[in-house]
Length: 235
Image (cartoon, one colour):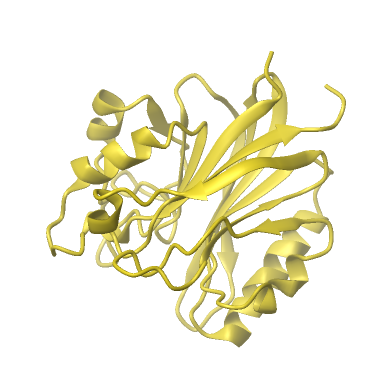
C-alpha cells in the first residue's frame, strides 16, 4: 500500500472566471485533472441568502471521482463560509465539523478526520482575512483548536492571504512546515503565493506545484496548488 497521497487547494471564486462567465463545469474539470485525494475549496458557495453552492453537487457526483465532505449548515451550500472539502469517492470520513474564526466579517474553516490508504489524517481547509491582525487572530484560533485535540497527522490547506513568508501565520509555525509551491495569485499574472499547504509531524512533502494551464488561468483569479505528500510515521 502506498505511503503517498495528493492534496490540493483552490480558490474557485464562486466559479466565475476572468472572462466573467460562471462555468462550474470548467472548474470541475480542473479539479479532476489535479488527481488529488483531497481538495480544499475556497469561495465554493455564493455569499448572499442561503449561500447556494457555486459547484452543484449533482455535477460533482456525475462528472468527477470526488464527493463533498458533509459540512454545510443547510441543504444548498457545499461548505462553511465558502470553505469546502472534496475527497475521492469511497474515502472514509470519521469526523467533520465547522470552525468559527474571529473577524469583523464572519470567516470560518472546516475540519475533517479521514482515513486515506488505511491511515488516519486530519485535514483543515481555511480562507483567512485580508487584514493582517485578523488573519493572525484566525491563525491563533486554528493553533488553539488543533492544540486542544489528540495528536494526529494533519494537513492545513487554503487561501491564507499572506504575502510574506510566514507573517501572520506565525501562530501556526510550531509543529508545522509551511509550503508555498509557487505564485498562485493573480491567475492572469501570478505575483503572490497566497495559497499554501502546511504539514504536521509524520507527513513530509515529496513534490508540489501550481497548475498553470490555460483553463486554470481563466477559471478563477487564483491558480490551484497541489502537493504530493508522504507519511513518515509507523503504520
